Amino acid sequence: DTAVSQTPKYLVTQMGNDKSIKCEQNLGHDTMYWYKQDSKKFLKIMFSYNNKELIINETVPNRFSPKSPDKAHLNLHINSLELGDSAVYFCASSFGLSYEQYFGPGTRLTVT
Amino acid sequence: GENVEQHPSTLSVQEGDSAVIKCTYSDSASNYFPWYKQELGKGPQLIIDIRSNVGEKKDQRIAVTLNKTAKHFSLHITETQPEDSAVYFCAASRSDSNYQLIWGAGTKLIIKP
Picture 1: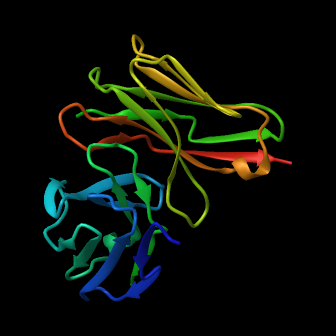
Picture 2: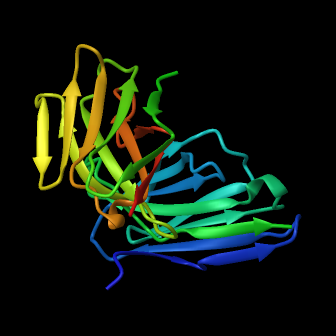
Picture 3: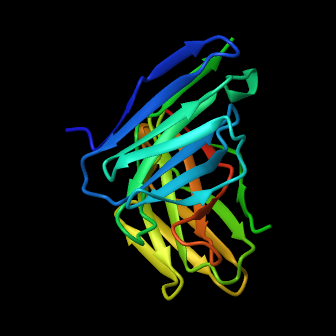
């Protein structure tokens, strides 16, 4: 069984569109994250939720809006997509104050 | 701001040889140092970690060493195998923020048959 799952795996869209990426974890973790990995493989934290509360909100455009309907889900909505948003987006989760993070398989977003 | 420098960016070794990846961190209060392995098309996966009260930790063919004075930590892989080919990331905990890691830029390890 997949521990951290993301949908879709691939997303190709045009500039200006709005899209969402969904993440679910079945590990019973209470902390979830969104990372962006650029073409050079650099990992950048975007957001983190603990028990459905936003605890990390790095400097990202406000076109990006996370939403956590419950502890097992963290979705990422992106408005007015731009070419520079093209990247692989990873969801991750952890238990409480543990730094050990479990990553999903990633969503490759391509904006044309 | 705080950062983690990782070297080399690419490392190519012969199968069976050892590989060493090095990281330097700037936050002297960091106390947790994980290493993640990212295989092609997958998310990073934790392979080993070390806390600041320990100098070395081993798990079969992989080991991590920590020098707190110099603020260095390293990943050592012995008897490398083709399945070790991947991108490896080091990270350090941020002392000013719960739950957050400062990530290195990654090392692409290539194992030559």
